[in-house]
Image (cartoon, rainbow, N blue to C red; front, top):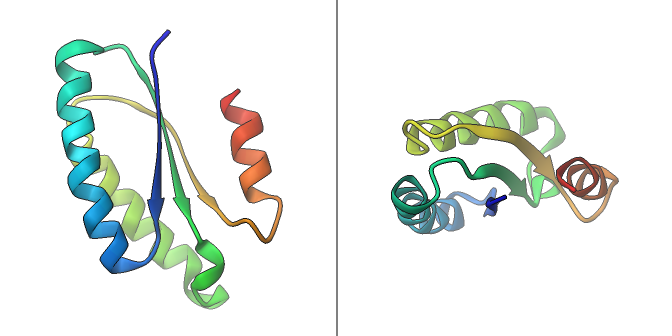
Length: 94
């Protein structure tokens, strides 16, 4: 079973940089591993004001889904090392 676990930094500048690599990964998956399971983590959510987290997460999620083209993402997680979200994401992936 093929799996892609891609971790984006929620920070706008880092996110844009990560997006370029992600698009390349998706292009290669669509050629060589069309049935790969894709999981995405939007990491460092703790750096976003709590009142804005949902909005920022949904915006990044939408961009990721659009960049994924015709492949299916199994799950997109918002994560942080400062709470249980990272542990929960990994436990659902494995």
